[in-house]
Length: 275
Image 1 (tube, helix red, strand yellow):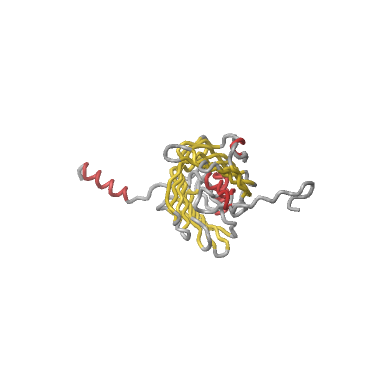
Image 2: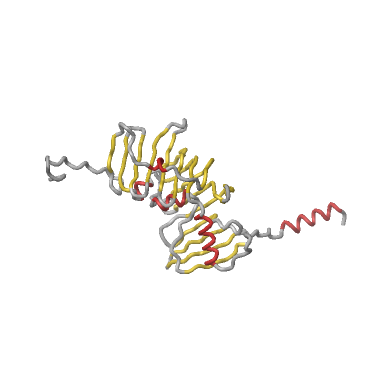
């Protein structure tokens, strides 16, 4: 066999060989509970994020893309600012986990009220509690409270497959074998959504997904978040989470469902409000 034929033979043989799976320093993990614990810790290591992003939404209510400035801190501090195509401010949403405020430049209106899922999710086509919103934007997966777990290894995708069970509900987690971060989460048997994490980059001593995608099949909704320049785990600037309305803005109080609350009638002099 001449050298050219030998080279072609070797390429053909090697192309049919499975690629080697690179595990972490501890080697392959066989126990589902052990993998769940190290995966939980790997994603929990990111506690704050600040930087720029774009969010793309596709839903029955409409499609669109927004530029965002994002500052978030676990468990429930949120600051989101949106801008238009010309980078002019459009709206800013702030929540401290108990109260929220939303300032809209159009109309110079400041909405405030309880930090309910309906209120803190006003930038999104899906309704999420503030803790869950923060987790997703930190590239983390909310786990179902599992009654049992199973573990397999997908050699073709070179990923762990960890499945959590609770009654009829399952959550299947596809986990990178080296850095132990979830790359895909699928919930079946109940109301939920699928998550996809891509374009992982080394940020300091953390491995972080700079692209997060949410798909809610029942709601026919997709949301994609792309980070362009972010800082992780810096001390949060707490002034970003202050809820005071801008000077001169019209203040509107809303309830937990986002509905405007009529102002209380003025109280008679010396009497309790509403007397």
